[in-house]
Image 1 (cartoon, rainbow, N blue to C red):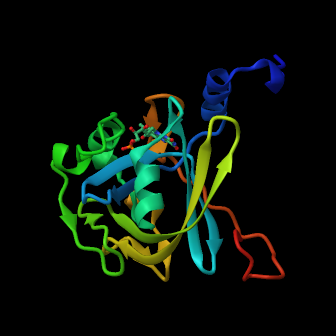
Image 2 (spheres, protein in one colour):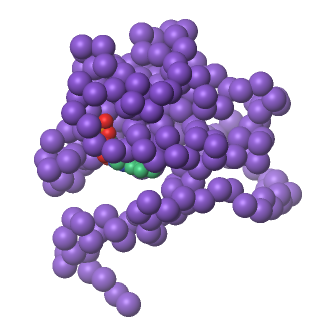
Length: 207
Ligand SMILES: Cc1cc2nc3c(=O)[nH]c(=O)nc-3n(C[C@H](O)[C@H](O)[C@H](O)COP(=O)(O)O)c2cc1C
């Protein structure tokens, strides 16, 4: 089957891309409005962008042309927390995608506990095994539907005890949630470890 991108509408393209680019990690993003309302929502268009300084990016789309609360809060406050949820948090993570007006806090609705962050004003969630305190570095608009790729510098990593050794995360213990197309999720499954390949420069990103 051959599909020409020019013949597809944005919804069809979205379905294709979110089915093809799988599994995706999920950034569970906590933001705070200027009025102080705590917001949390999942974003699976998520990747890391730089390791010095550390930067991570999430692609925040629009709903009927309107920027999502997460995007508005990140642009307004410039600070936010990206969490990695483990499988035990799948239900609240999924439910946190439900649409609510800006004055409604998903953090309160879902009964999620928070703790103060160390370097930013936005608190982090207590339950997830990883939290990254971020400061907005740059937001770049892409495409006709007005997606914003928001890149944040990670100022502090919070990693649950026992998950990290020599800066390496034990993926099976982390047990992150993977996103597939639509409301479908997976966990890591079988892990295969191969002999490292020879490299001349061990400092490059993505080795
Ligand atoms: C697992 C999952 C991943 C999602 N990933 C994205 C994403 O990458 N970008 C996006 O714009 N919306 C994504 N969404 C939808 C948002 O979470 C949803 O629009 C949410 O209501 C946004 O909340 P907010 O308006 O409070 O920011 C995702 C939803 C789920 C369930």
